[in-house]
Image (tube, rainbow, N blue to C red; front, side, top):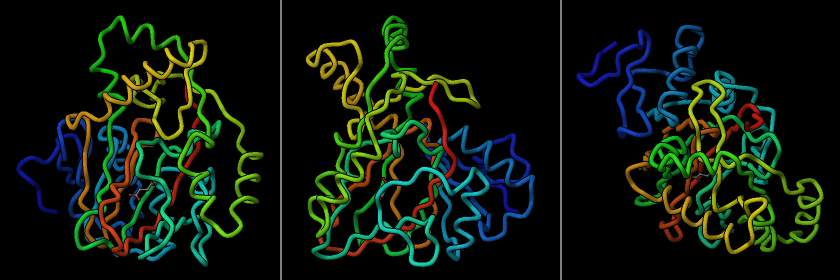
Length: 290
Ligand code: SIN
């Protein structure tokens, strides 16, 4: 195994290069199709908590091996969104943009599936077809945002809870463009009543505090007027937009990104016009925020 000049110390089995100082790392010299070593698996879990999003280039994975990667971090058979599914492996969601096709509304900052009481712990996204230019994904760190806030505001926010709702998100407009969209919408609405999460959550492994709201799914802060809630949420959402707290990935074919859904928000940059973009996604685990 080659060691990089700036490889992160404290890892015996992984070569890890920070992607930005606040969020993200590239893991080098690893073949994700062979993760039999428990020592490697343990270091991958440790790295995910430390860096919040991990990038792996030039990976050749079958759908089954993609699912095995997710199993390093959690059970892949938990909360899912409304994306089409892989034809043989139903836990794989297929995120495909084709010329003239429907878009998913993922071009808004969000933490996956916080419209459910137990959102996924994380996600493994694997690029199959990438546009010639554009189609990046960006992640932002909820711990970095929290740590940037003045302590009096942190104390105030720690008392608050927010309502998260799928109706507030990009999903209803997506359903409206489907041939059977009205029925899908009604079913989804029945299955996903709004839920409440703390505005500041605690990471169950690192113990760090995290700002846990996102424009795609957070509708309002409980106990505040609509005007007060909108103003406070707008302030927090704006913090996530600071590039200092972000990592933006330029996809290449066969790239894998794994993120900690407890600590991050992400945004699919939809700047690639009619180009073809295809990613396979496996969410894993489930997690009750506290
Ligand atoms: C998502 O999981 O929100 C989609 C990310 C992407 O398409 O880049």
